[in-house]
Length: 640
Image (cartoon, rainbow, N blue to C red):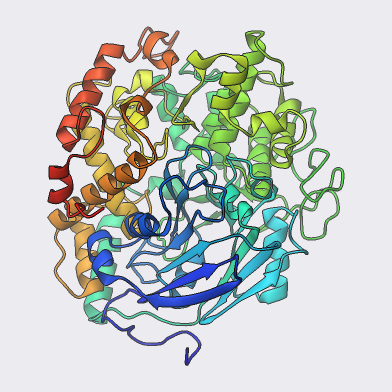
């Protein structure tokens, strides 16, 4: 390639970079190819475009942890522009936790850097002969030995690589959990931003790829920059910075603790209850009292990130600086921090300040584990971020182990409300030591080994997020039909049910509600708008029109959302997923909630069956959940 990066308008007259970077770790080689613009027109970017490239890159039956699986980093057409809340990077692979297609996204600035380096996607296959770091410096792609960072936490890895390569580089890395192929391992960027669910960190670790470091010095230009800037400014002023969205700045997701508690759907003691006596101590006001700074991702006007001054943690003493013995550096008691000395974990913007936790962490590692100590939750979150663990699945499996002990089914050393054992769990899981080897394999594995399947809160092998479906029946259908397993990011009917005006205790209309949400989020996460901006399809279409130089309508985006969702289903169908995999655990269907506004409620099995059957019918799928030829032809997917 003739130049470092690119400047001015890329070929194509739109805001795509126009290139795909292919990386073969087995051969330690890389090459570029033009972006497939026919695919980009149908799938746009992010989730959808990543799915389309994955379909051709990975044959059916490929082991998720084998060299043949692909790890795809993908931007969107608006990534790197001044369109607000478009700074995330998509990640697509096959999940080692579930075997399903998997997409996640990570915030910060690594996505825009990749776009400025000149790439819309990076498709990584193979397995390096030894641990490496992939360095993308505009058009110069190289591989560096990872000996100095392999085995270290994500935080220290980031500091060391930026010291070695330059402060302008943005890093996304896997931690000790990913290196040890833990199926709930995540990826971390900028210390506290995660691509969290389904084991993307384990896929990266299986490839002997410790990190990807990116620096881009190029630029982007819309076909008509004046029109683009005027549209973006108006959208920010009139739609983004309004009361509908500003909760993200004032409180962030911790405000949902209070909403869930009031609705009786706050997961408590492994979803045994929907209310938690200590909810106030881990809610928005408690979090706000510790806040010392705010943070936003690239181009975001909301700034949802909360930096907190972490308090000391109970008897464990593992709060503001001290780490449980056996930190990820391997030295007993040493925090994986820049200096390496005990208690020197990375702190930014000030000593003792850490980012998070978000609602899902407060719920799954807090109330769901019987933990009302906010300092302990903050420390648990920090450990998971550094070790590279998904806090939702980690909290879910710890809570399940706690209930196993409560019911005398198995003693894995964990008890509801016991802070000391709770804080030891992430290190043991990430390092695969002791009971951590079993915990790291997830709730489904523990239930098959020890019993308790009726209270194993998972779908397709992925642990439940933070909403009790007995108090939001549409949320139950969303969990059951999610492409990657139990997930709140595919559709969020709880907003209309438990938090809104719809009756949460009926199945009527819920299939269409879930479908609408799945289509909306499929295109939203393909354009890679942040989930916290409640923007309409019409506004998304307006952004696409000014960025791509062609008229894009809301109906075109709705159809694309349906196309993307069906492609995800096809990818799962070819791996053997059918109706039997769209289920809810017995606790939800048979065991009434004991207290709160949803007391006495279950999702009746006959109602769940009716919702699922209606869902398939409305989707144009057969009774086994397989898209019909007519539906595929309607969506332009008949060749797949």
